[in-house]
Amino acid sequence: MSEYAEVPSPPPGVVHIYTDGSNVSGNPGFGGWAALMLFVDQAGTRHEKMLSGSRPETTNNIAEMAGVFYGLRAIHSPCKVTVFSDSKYTVNGCSKWVHSWRGREWKTADGVPPKNLPQWQRILAEIERLAAIGCQVKFQWVRGHAGNPGNEAVDQEARRMAMALRDQQRKEVA
Image 1: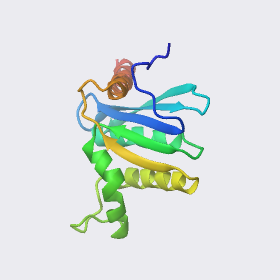
Image 2: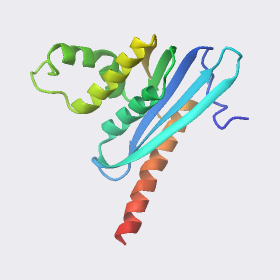
Image 3: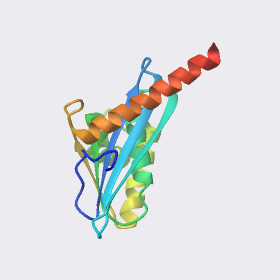
Image 4: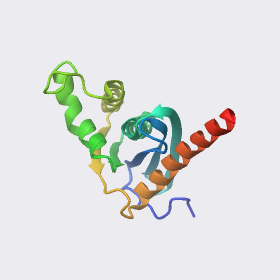
């Protein structure tokens, strides 16, 4: 039985990526990110992989975006991709805002660069890389802390990563 058996499988040929970020000691503070990737191959075999990491002195939004970036970066074959996130900021940014900002030379409607510009540019570059190899990427918001098994799994992993980094830093200081 798989570790994430409670997370529904996508249809064959579709990759589902559940992403989340966490910040455990201020904003900015110690942050963690996670991306759970699920795929069913043409033979019907389910594949799952949890990616995760941490960053010191990061914001919650940047941690959320890191999960998306690293999840997308792990794809290397043509497929349909659905990225699930409980961050409306991330979902709207990836599916709507980045295209407008780029069209205005990376400026918001107010004429200023968007917050977290390097992260938005990295995510858009991954979306475009995937499009170039035949992938279709879409983003879907899910309510956080509402019992969605995929969202709960990445929430727990992102938080675990952030707390592990915080605890490691505390030990080094002591």
